Image 1: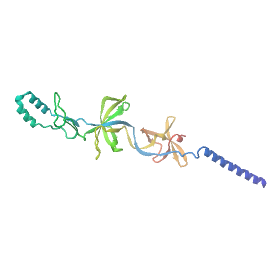
Image 2 (image 1 turned 45 degrees about the vertical axis):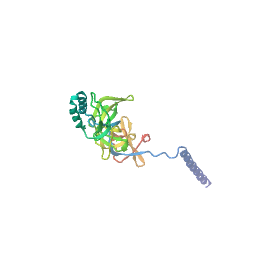
Image 3 (image 1 turned 90 degrees about the vertical axis):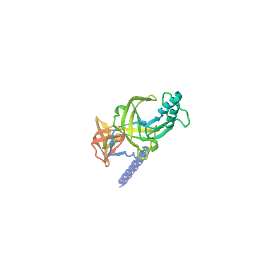
Image 4 (image 1 turned 60 degrees about the horizontal axis):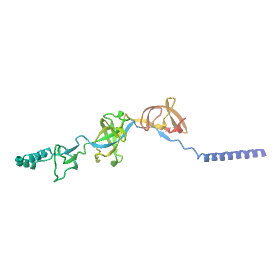
Length: 278
């Protein structure tokens, strides 16, 4: 009987020692390890993009300098031919300066009462700008310009309207390089239509995103969830309390996501990061 009591006491002591050792180990290791991060297999648009900074510029013909050649000729005739004085004064009185476009006065070069000498070029009186005819010059790095094609869709933002995105399309790529701070860029021209209630102005700084090949509404996972072994790709799928390795087939990828062609189903939870490797 005493032997049984001593056996029970020894077993109880061993149990208490085991519990204490576990607590010490947990305290030293910082407690239970953090749960692995999960990502859900979900549908999204996947495809690489080219990002660039740019500036809004007037289109060709949207900015004109208005001057009046007839007035210069009439003034020269007045100075050169005293005999034609009466005729020149008559023409001067009926002279009118007409702009070839409708727009907003951007700047006034000559004020009323100033003397203007035309010499060999017509003087500029005012500069008009058509704010409905603007375009974006995207400065694309030389490493990315080979992927830019006419007709590609693009979006851009400007600081004054926060995160509002303006849609556009690549309409030209200039062959002449623009070298700024020893960086070689090429200009891709983005044609767009302003959003209702948004007024854009020349020289506004833009952040441009030009879409490349894109697959829409496809199953995708973060890049960090996809692992490689022996030339094949796999993910670790959470299945209740256990995990399973699933071999997968991937398609297109961008900076953040892989397109998943096979191996997992929509809605399944997949472990992310190095801790998910098996």
